[in-house]
Image (cartoon, rainbow, N blue to C red):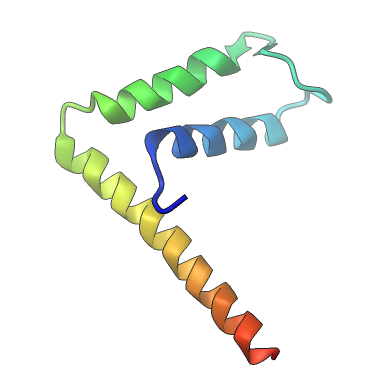
Length: 81
């Protein structure tokens, strides 16, 4: 993966929601919350955002977060050699 895409953001949201839910095993619908619908809704919200600059800033933010984390990790690894 060279950059964060809408599907990566949606996946992270779904995993985070599942982690804080009271459900102890995965299922598509947790009470009234449908994970598949939520996943697709997040992607559609990003792809079809009325404000294209918002979607661009969202992608830039997450790409920056991932890139910084990668650089810090690489720096830490090389300092251990």
